[in-house]
Amino acid sequence: MHSRYERRLLDTAAGGCEVVICLVVRRFRCLSPECAKSTFAEQVGGLTSRHARRTPAVTAVLEAVALALGGRAGARLSCRLAAGVSRMTLIRLVRAMPDPAVSASPRVLGVDLSGVRTNFC
Image (cartoon, rainbow, N blue to C red):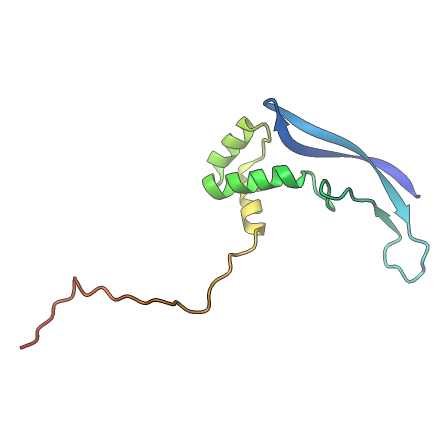
């Protein structure tokens, strides 16, 4: 073990109050000469990821708010949900989401000729 440090993670609200998880994380030293990293920190599965300041649960809530409302309106709602973030954070969350899969070609094609003038004389 190399050292320890404290991580603070924003989590989903409880009783209308913001919840911050204070977590003591261990750092380890890699003694292998082939390893590119000299030290690395442990991750708690399902709770932390590298460099994250929010848990996956609150990130999913903020992504849903960002998709539904967008920037300023989403930021106002996130404050009411006790997970206040800025409008730019919500926009970054939307930009970081993967694009939805697009099908290769349409299966049904319809043509509307109701507005077309036809002259069959």
